Length: 404
Image (cartoon, rainbow, N blue to C red):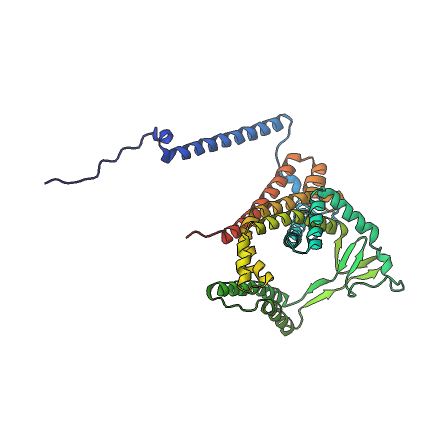
């Protein structure tokens, strides 16, 4: 009678780290990581040593000192006696504002132009081609300066809005477009306004959930339910009801001409508008080409098959073409968002104080702390870029082709 047993397992040997394919890749990655850490440690030690020889050191105490300069566009309270840290925060917020607005607007321009570039209408197709070629082949800095110059030269001065002047009419009686910027009503938050805002945010999520449910129902059962007017009802009706039930907790502060300028409301400076619009139309031209490439990557048989089932062109685009084209569009779209965010550092050309103009500009020059300011500036752009990439990659993975 014989017994069968497993052969004895071979003991681990150090040579397996090089010759065994199961461990070799990890070994080389670990060696590369150690070399990188050693290089960074050497550079850091060399920097500290050189600074010490010159009687300097890396310190961030200057951030608590008074800044001593004003910032024209400030989303939070700030004056010249505020600290350099607060000035940097104002610059960061200004950068995030223009980056967010620019990404949203550039996406709208790019998707619209990309789809219209494939329009059967010859005139529309050529006009979109002119837009793409004109804006993406001229440096964005030039477009920023052109738009800013047009705004300051064409739009009227605030004095033109006096009551006895024929050109004094404001748009809808609430908006004033001047060479100093745009004046809009500002919200006045009263008791209960937080509930209204939270209701509106919940309504936005409700719209996404409803449209997702409608799409899933269509794919699973073939039943088509309306999405247009129900989305508008979900978005606005709950918020309006809560607004009136709570006694109108949110009011409006309208801008009014007082002296030589407007008082009250929100003042959106021309520098912000010029930077925002220039970045949007410039980046939108690149996004348009990404959208066109993504749509053309989908087989024409998909369009023909959908049309043979009686689907309308708009639904073919929304339900058949774009869901497949997004897998091609999203990866380069991430790069365009990152480029727009980094291109916002050109804001100083029109006097818009972003983080490059505050922390990397005036604060650096006043304090002489170049290394600290540049390190913080690099850390901010690295953080925001990684955050954008992370969010977009989550969406990219959600729409990626699922293997069986």
